Amino acid sequence: MSTAAAGSPTSPATALVDLGVKACTAYGREDLAARLGRIRAGLDDPAVHIVVAGEFKQGKSSLINALLGIPVCPVDDDVATAVPTFVRHGAEKTATVVYEGRRETVDFADLRRHVVEGAEGARPARVDVTVPRKLLSGGLVLVDTPGVGGLGSAHAAAGLAAISVADAVLFVTDASQELTRSEVEFLRQARELCPTVVCVLTKIDFYPAWRRIRDLDAGHLRMVGDIPLMPVSSPLRTRAVRANDQPLNVESGFPDLVKFVQERVGGGAAARRSADAAADVLAVCEQLAGQFTAEREALADPANAQRIVDDLNAAKRRVEELKTAAARWSVTLNDGTADLTADVDFDLRDRIRKITTEADDAIDEVDPADMWPEMEEWLRARISYDLLGNYTYLRRQATELSEQVASHFTEASGEAVGLLKVYNPSFLVEEREVEHRIELAKMTAGKQVMVALKSAYGGALMFTMLGSLMGVALGPIGIGIGVVMGHRGLKDEKKRQLERRRAQGKNAMRRYCDEISFVSGKDSRDTVRRVQRQLRDHYTRLAEELNRSTAAALAAATDTAKRSQADRQKRLKDLDAELTRLGQLRDRATKLAGAA
Ligand SMILES: Nc1nc2c(ncn2[C@@H]2O[C@H](COP(=O)(O)OP(=O)(O)O)[C@@H](O)[C@H]2O)c(=O)[nH]1
Ligand SMILES: [Mg+2]
Image 1: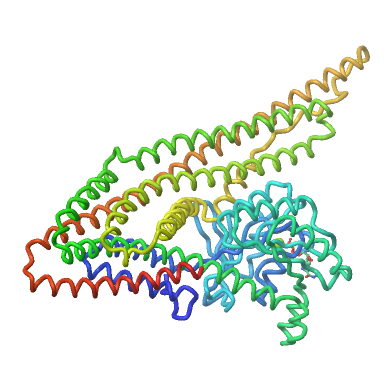
Image 2: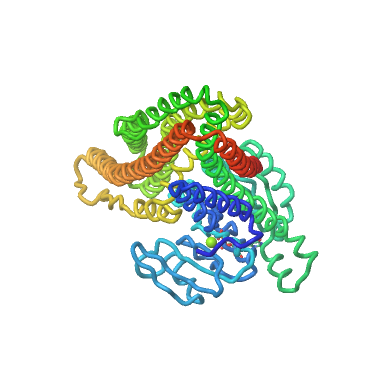
């Protein structure tokens, strides 16, 4: 990983974290320095994923090519993109086809062969492409997703799943007609999963009535929430770039889109990362300052020194409890994980049960011989949406669990800090501070869950998972009407055969649903386990940090009794200097956390 360049959007945060590391090292707290080191590594890796989603043939691949000014993603009139393509910055054009478990470098010019529908051989999970383009040099990654006819399909859910770990979504719809109901529904779900969603209206060069469509779409978007709409034309942009024609470029609508991508998306992601980093620096400052504050107060007010030591002893016992296996946070985490597993499993079963009932009812109404392809398509779409619903549920519940665990720490450490506050109201500011701490705790709590989820899916793996699920065949259905039909009882025979087809159809649906239940049940149990591990490691480290901080405060406060008068004055001066320095670091961190 390269070091974030000076002048990058996260460089103020990097500088702040570096100062924090210096402070931790100076005070002998390599545990806190290590924590900030991990944060810094995160800042150094600025990958910001923009997923380009939308229905089949709306112009997703063309949009990426026009944005970059070079043909990267294959655009075709009759063949669809079948594999997600990740386009990153690189010194040279390269293309790597990623299969489950192996990677294969291919000729850039040959890319098309691998990403379109119907390519021979094993279907790759994704394709990684690098191109030397300035737009991407800050870490932007554009993800071209497979399109399919009708967003109600399995691919749409795969797209949504990728969106759940994306930094932004460019939703592409062309100006041939207003947003359909399924498109609006997709946007609604994307909005819940991703902080930044923008709707791009393509082909405005081709549809003269695009302004009317734009206005209609804007109306739909207002119902969904804060989603900007940007009309563009990819061919105009391509021509403008080739001819270096500024007015034409403006007409293409791309300057606004580029600005949005750079500022709102790139800037937004950088701001979130910076705020996360600042939150950690603040937490570290608090732990470092606690020690000095206690010592300072004991020195300044020898009559009270014993009481301070007693209080710190009590605080020490409280945070020591955080380290034991019987700690309440640990119980909350273990019980919560068991509940989460059961709840997510129940949610999945409940969804599948409803689907099965619906499918059975539907089959009773029709002759599967006529309707089977439609039923298959319906079932796949329905299941993939419910799988995603199940995943969203998991994510929400896991975040809540992490917040519950965090609250035990806010309580224990809050009490410790609150205790010190009594002696020095000037340093550890007002009540507002408490709310601020809870906000920060929540922020870190949610972040831990996302870290666990992202490490598992990495955006592309989710595609593969859903993709392979969708590959489960429903199996052929015997369509033997009239084959074994005798001359007698023709009507009865027809009825009997219809019943048999219905039973076969129901069976096939059940088998498919069982398979889905099994595979995704296992997947979500694994995911919950990963979340638990992440939370356990994070909060175990935090417990250890708090223990060291409290122990250091106690030792320092106890030592004050041994100091001579002259020594005391000198030490007081030193401590004031340290606290001022830490106060400055805190102020910087607060400002940065607030700026986001
Ligand atoms: N006139 C015009 N055609 C476009 C535009 N964007 C895409 N197309 C065409 O629409 C078709 C589908 O585009 P493609 O990028 O493959 O769509 P995707 O399936 O969403 O990736 C292709 O024939 C493109 O040339 C546009 O802005 N204007
Ligand atoms: Mg495409």
